[in-house]
Length: 370
Image 1 (tube, helix red, strand yellow):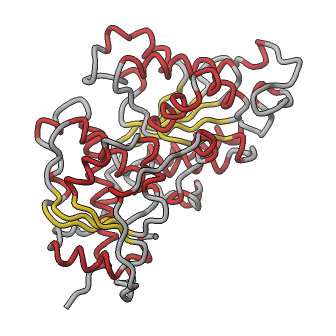
Image 2: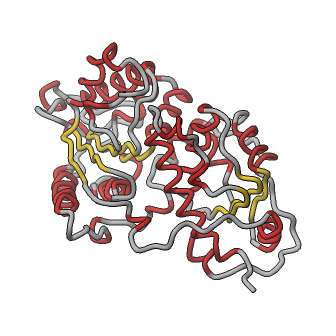
């Protein structure tokens, strides 16, 4: 369900009770994880031409120019410049020189929340002249989940024939991920795969505040060497000229909307948080399959960091799918404690607040007004 649908007002009573996300325990085969490595539905139609740079931020216009040139340079020739033999192999005759270009093999978009980095990354994916099966797009978490599902070597084989790998929300949260991703991207660059990534942290600063980055400096510097960094300045477009996030509704309003909105879910917020602990984050997208709106009662601060990080992933999947979120309890900017918002994962939490706030705005039309 898109935000435009939500804004049209509540639907007639459907006669069917809302579903509960807590009752769902989806199983996701590995091949679905690979097939779904495309821009999320929210970014199906975005292109460079639909990105509107802020006239007060010249770095936004410059980023579009650089990325258009980058896409044009990926002329659709198979990785390494020769014909691909199959999904897990390459054509003959590829030389080391031909498949290892000098200098950075990727672009890295750094900037704050809501400056359009994902819009630009998806536009690059769409503009790259290669068939969709040879371009991959996913968040950093989805990439690590793919490795977990396929195994490291199979992931290398699967992605090595791609022309482009786009990684959204690139963040390193522990030493294991640092080594894993550094090694994976190094192997893919050697295979001729171009890289593009977005984050709120410059490549050389990845991991700061979350673990002893100095102990893994070699791996972090190795990651940085793969990318040309592009700084994109600006304010969160989700808050430009928009009203503040709506205040939470009452339990009764949320429950009524859940029963009058097609394909809505209805859950108690603390119970949903407990359920998320029993579902692997790689399945959170499948958890929301077919859901037109998420209705939550009793929103309150998350109790601990593990729970908070799971909620961040769910917020990302809901935002990707443009699923409005209607809630009672506390407003979303009170989900995370002050300590959390000052800690190493603060950027994840601020992103979740920003996205849930946008989805709460989308959900206002689901509630009947006097």
